[in-house]
Image (cartoon, rainbow, N blue to C red; front, side, top):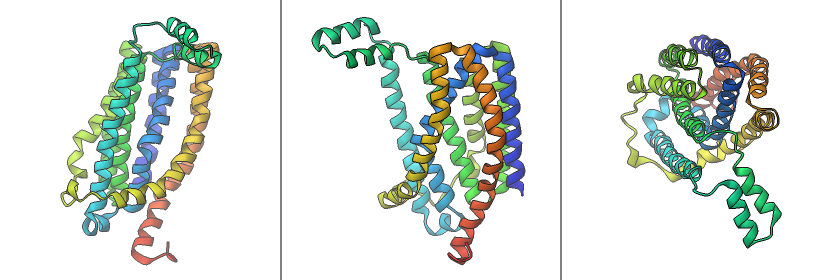
Length: 304
């Protein structure tokens, strides 16, 4: 039950902080904030979510003792993915400082190859609605949120309810101060996102000692275990990705055709409706799935 209390507390605070941000930023800046978060959520789902799912399904108090290679594999993969995402982000952000404008680059391509589709695609890149600063902060949000979700998954998998509750409480206290405070003080989507990165990353760093597994030496990481985690998680990740494309595409289209102010109003209404309903289903997953996994590990298929 402690897990459920912590989960609903987290959901409540997320809802309150979301309303604070919408009020203090105003429609246009909140629209930028909401679109950047949508980009971050889609990216996190593709890049990192399979590790969170693998931890929830395979990691446990028993496996921490008997199969330390599992935790080592998860940690090594997590670090490698952070490095890969940083490299790709640096490359993409570097494109934003390309010396030719999108129009000149499009005309240059049209001069070499008379291909209207290629030219239109390149010109369209110049109309990417997020600035390089917001895109960079969105990717920082991906890493910080993935760290938080991964730590929470480890605590849930080992039924360490106290650690999970402390992680949630610290994160939300920091979020109230840094996200809500950033929106109020600066009225800037960029500063608000930066506050989110600091609150998520800060909660993990402050409680990092609680999630250390001393038996899991990184050299024991296994490619075979990585494959098993991927086989289990990737179908779920693919389904979640397709589902998340709906709000992402909606926000992108609203921004493209009507501007950030309309995106802000649309996003607030959408989030209020979706999060209220989604919290109930997610709560059942938080509690019941982990109980079933433990029953499977200790008592077999029939009991699970």
